[in-house]
Length: 449
Image 1 (cartoon, rainbow, N blue to C red):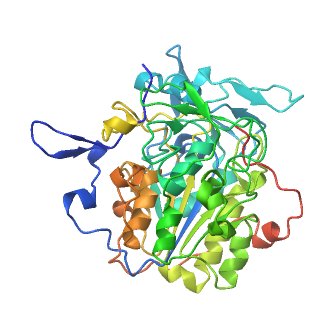
Image 2 (image 1 turned 90 degrees about the vertical axis):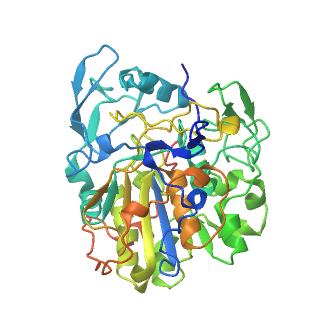
């Protein structure tokens, strides 16, 4: 049976109480105080990398729920084996691949996911190509951040497919075309670059309905409220740093009023500018940071520089006055087709719009870096992309968008605002900020699927 996009709570007719998935707590619904970061957190940075799972990227991380093996569709146990971060093949990660791997919650269908190899690549794909983990030596900087601050091993992408809808959820909590639609964008747009509102008239994106069927399509230009709108109303600054304004990873490009209004000036088509903005004392209240393909961590297209790229941003904040009042969220936009052993939980809420029976997409890593993050802590609480939006809404006293943010948790377990603020220690990485600021190579897509 098709897994569907589920809301986050259900009204119990027996008790009249709200029951939240996986013990999540909705402060607004229960009349409890919001996250106590208001007035303390003045800057939030969301670094959105590409296409990894905890089993794939954080093999052996102490305290985290990480598998050493997994089941394939024949019931055979497959050991997870190491590969380089800059590997030369890419598991497919469309909605159908989610369905295949999820297999009704059995998580045994990863071997059914097709593999794309570099042309003329010998020995590709390798045996059990989906059952791999990145050599920890290649991602030492990520491990240092995860072990020093907070790592979440129950962070799930809200959508059940690839990057385009994920980048809609991270700015607005939905990939629906309108606020009242029961349809959601589920795949990457087809029909040529640029993607989104500025694309050619022949461009389309597949839509999924609340029964889990991809049976319609439309031009990928939507119109509904977003977190940038809430920030604008509150007089709070924001920027979206990206390698290209026309990519599928530039979330505002698919929202009509952001693409064609004054806010388009906040979309910066040079992702490295965040480094100079930090140095110049111009970090906005909220920043989204999307990588170039080379530092994206995306299978087949990255060159291994992703950990250094992320470390450059974290170090820039940590070594500035911004450290005292900043939260950095580092997460990955989808699972990328890699095996992960944890079945996503069912989300029970708002059945009329989302469809009852929907489950989250697969796990993605989440690292929380801040002087207020719990040190050396692994969160086992269920989070999704809506959780990041809800955190921002609560610390800045913003209203809810009413989408995934309304029902998500607020990441409260990842913080202790009463602790002595953590002192920053530089993250070790082989490449520094000058490498990215001085890189003259043409930009590349983080992803094309």
